[in-house]
Image (cartoon, rainbow, N blue to C red):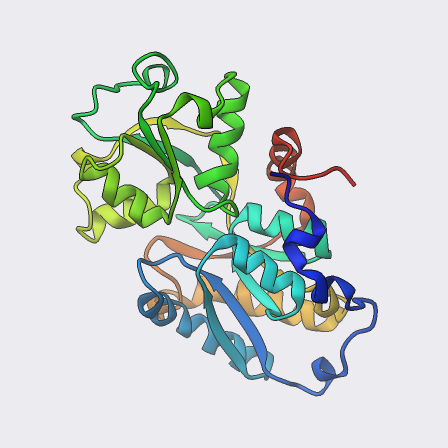
Length: 297
């Protein structure tokens, strides 16, 4: 299904005019900071990103309310509709929000010093699948496969794009296809409840480090080319306040140098932020167009 403007925004939000900068921004109202579900549950996710929200509030001189949003597609919708002002979101979610509601990236998060990460496809050691050729060939036919939600870059868009490039329709090739959270994919694959699934390197590494899965039970059989990392994006209305955007970018740029004294500002292995613009996310936009999940303008 192509994700349309109406699907993303909803009828009411689509009818709202994005042209005028709301007076509430100038008056210093609370900013809603939306964060995707990077951690296994909402409580842990909120606790993980609350220090970053507090840092932004201090540096921006504005109250910042943290909101964990369950799905990547849901976060894109909330940014597009104006429910969220600032979002830390996956690349595909950002591209959707930009395409349909002109949301704008201001920074990219760094992981181990780099603004990139990788999509993965994993299986378990008892599956009999030892390569991506096995999965896409006769050995994989009729198996179970899990994608992330349809707003996920590494969990949906990029592996789907790869399957299509190989001439494989997952709905026809696999016996069961489901969509669930990244953490659930790893847990169920490692337990042998699923034959294979899509994930990303940061999540797999974190789950191994936290003892949530055993490394030997999560066998990587495919890795994508480097992908642009998660985006910090703002709504179209807020982006027009250029002085605010510059303050936000400066506040985010301070995070990396502060980490030695305040390591709780970001999860383990995340090392700061770097300024970014929409062009950096072109590979994701191209994949969306190639799969037909993004309609050309």
